Image (cartoon, rainbow, N blue to C red; front, side, top):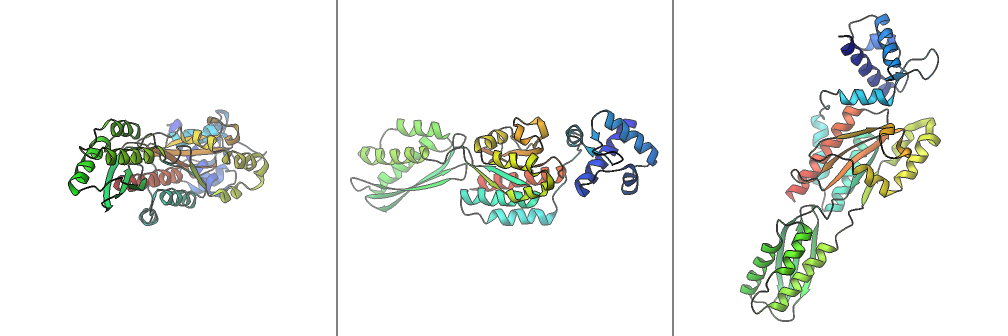
Length: 338
């Protein structure tokens, strides 16, 4: 019972400190929260929590603030992630559904995340190596010119024109379309290239088959690098206030290094699970005063990439986790629907 009560006291301290940005005292806890005990009991619980390293007293005669250990226990004991309101869900859907291509999806996602959480948002571009070929279409522009359209599971669409050395009949085009679909659709990028190169040419149209295959292989190889990330909301770092030199400056420098961001995103769990790294738990000293909340995204259960936010350890963890998860799900749905 005492353990449950102390957890309730810790939860109240975290919620009040995030809300007010001021150290929290026992009297304020009793007034704001229905803890069912006296101020003296709350003070005793706070003393135990402080001794165990979950809260600390920044100044003499001041209230208490959570430590990284306290935030970690708070996050680990969250029974549920706070659901987004219907208005927030509609806003996410409306904003993301207006995207016209993959770059627009990523750009809108990073802006939306930073606005919802008031933190720095980071979105990784979908990994080409994890993508599969969703569809290939061959469209005859003229008997000697084809439009080749390649669609990947990552949402990427590539269109290229192929000039043929000789006219292609409708029957030959049908056979060629069947050949490339059989060799590539549903395959990973690497396997699709192997399948296309190993495919037998359409009888009497070896030159046309070779031209189309080479165009498709070039399109598969020319995709955007897996090392691309988009960052938004850096202006939210102004909320750090007086700790610019100790917290914001190192973080701003780290945000310039995309390799660092990719490593942070690389810790994201697949399948919709939200990963939270608090303070010094992360791999980089520059992020010791921050928390990183990430998750993977992609069609169905396949995580093509990751997205998340970077912000102060004093953050609304339930709300932030809900926003990160919701945006990832909407982006996954958009990619899955093409």
